[in-house]
Image (cartoon, rainbow, N blue to C red; front, side, top):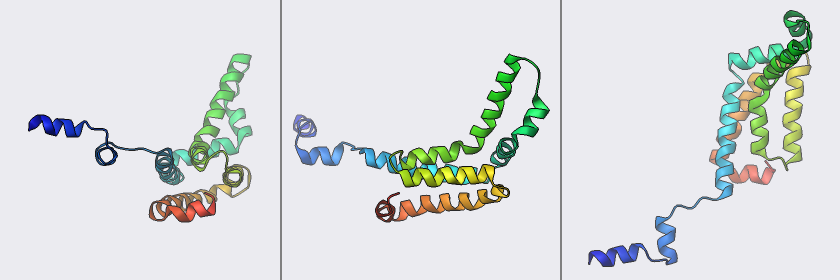
Length: 154
């Protein structure tokens, strides 16, 4: 009787596979990554690190004047340091870009516009909390009704 139970557990019928073997689809993983990306990016918009990195990235002249040293090696280090601040203020939105999908031109353009406005437009820093709220709401909406966002092309 024990062998019969083992035999039934190792059979290859379809009902067995549906009930006992986990199935993962690429769509399920991309949805969970998108929800996670929106949550992380939304919360990061409120962080002091985002604000500090955005301040450094928005005013490169002040950064360069303060940290400038003579020499090629120090210039390279200065560029890497400033690039780190710029990456630091936008990494979360870039992560959402990948979650939206590189094939979604409208989504990529919208997020690029948000990053440019945040960095280049006077008062763009005040946009960060609104972006954070929108990203958090988008993640919650995706959890509640993913079909709505799929129809919208997100």
